[in-house]
Length: 360
Ligand code: PMP
Image (cartoon, rainbow, N blue to C red; front, side, top):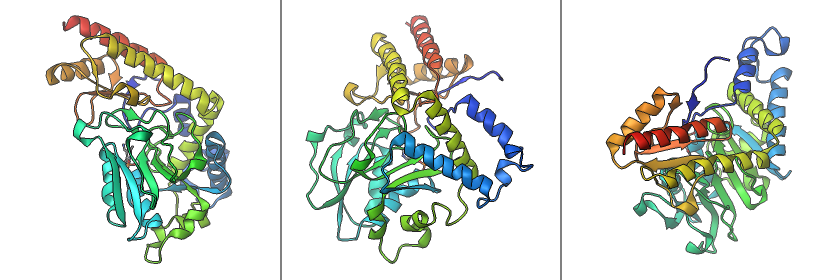
């Protein structure tokens, strides 16, 4: 194994090394077929088996009920910001959104193109340092769905429990899907870009309840209708073959690990170690309110931007890479998705202690 550094990137993010190794072999000669993985026709049996296995694994790991379709789309999670309202909302209908960050806000702006949008909660005025509890907002009885972002990658906030309201839920789970179990049956749509917990960039997973496929109006382009992709099992056009294959390998790794509940336990342990370090040293201040803290993206500040810059530089020099906060908020961010090793968190914590001592 070549020397690996600890990669705290928010996405694309670190993947299991075993997956990289499998991909390196398969890309040259897939299952001794004499063809490389990325040369296969997407309609060949070899590739169809890859797609089928990936779908079966995701269904199993997330316990997806049979009345839900699973789609593998392109265009990133950002395209879901408009595809959701384009498919679910008529112009005189209302949907409710929670504004808990830049991605949530982008989803709101896109939904406003298609229908009436009720923003039931916003933490924008406090730099998005928290997410709401159920009793802090109301959803109109005529709302078609409640849209929220389960983990706010930039600010390091996450709903400790999924919202519990008497309305159909729609969630952007790009940065925490497969990190903890959740009940799919409470949702109309769940979507997530792959490039954090599932694989490389290039494929977006959409889980959609079957009865919603028919809600779409006539004037929606074919490629932008969920129904189009559902009817053709995500093979209406060429799917993102390589990304889809990698997702399958990551899911296989996760299954061998013990599944979503097993990884959740490790995720909780990793995050606890890091938050404990932040809380116990004066040098560091967490960005998110404690009750909203994310298990995936740990955001923190040092007393000055100069110290933050030095921290990030010196950390990178000892193999702790990608700790710079998002350009819109600054500070530091350690992204510790499923595949991020616990030893990397421990190394960071020990670096934090040394840095605090040297810069008293
Ligand atoms: N939603 C969330 C929560 C994200 O973290 C991101 C990207 N980091 C996006 C949406 C946008 O995803 P994409 O780049 O795949 O469009």
